[in-house]
Image (cartoon, rainbow, N blue to C red; front, top):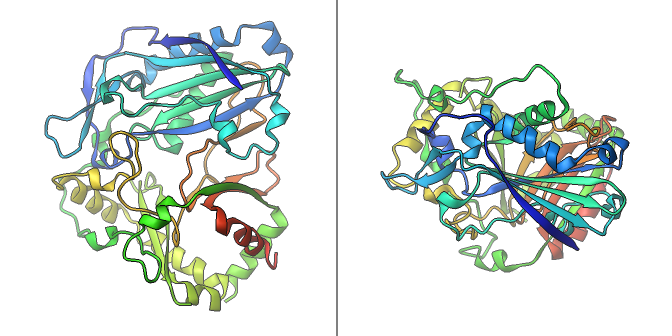
Length: 405
């Protein structure tokens, strides 16, 4: 049981630009929703010695001077087409102060269940869009003296690296560390008037395949899902890597995110094959398919993709949630997977002045097939896999997952 005791609205500590900030084509296709993450901290003398909520409020107000767009609000753009624009109006970020009779250890391996989700603020997406904060925070105190920080960051405003950069700088301000690294806010940098040598093939944006014999996925959408938090040790990962390096036909699809920062401007990566082919061939065949898809992501193909999106009359088709937060659009569940790798992200070390977190992970943001690959907090080379699947298939998946490793 989690009880919210107070709500605090935190605004930038200094005047910030009052402006409308441009959002590029990649921003425009993101769900009007928040990405939920959770940080757990064990009891410490530093937590006893200071007022945690006061420390968070003060440091957040200072962080929002640099990250001032996060204190603003989205609005529907006058041009229409389901596009949005960012009003940097300093309306602020809410911090919910809560208490729970639970102890940190009650959450076990921190599987992102509804119990975890109760520690992260919820959002009513039927609220007018210009009233919805872009960042939401909840500090929950547990009976053992530990705390959690539940965080939601607008998916339109920030991807994983950007959200983690914000948290890292906020934490540094809170504990008095330096140097502070400001964000890069110019979203027009991804666009160019230079002629492109590639053209984008819109056929790759086709809906994911459905099950054999089913014309749509309506029945699959209705099925209850469950979540599992599976561990792969360093030895098991080495076995899989060695297998990959050795050299019923239903199409299946795996989608991921390509981080294109190193190229210049983030886009989707899709690898498709027949299930029969995947089962009859080595794991190396599957990894080769994925590698080939990733290698197709170049500076030019990303820019061609953004140019295509910019020319669309309406971008709402690419959002998996409607404007009220309800599922719509393409369904990436059975027989497909949507895999997000956090292995290269700087996930850990958010010390707000009472020590580093003992766990950081996703909240309950899963749909059927949603998968996160998360490096171990201990740095021992192991991975945790958070995966949401239909309840009827989870048992078989777990058995298959650990076969031969």
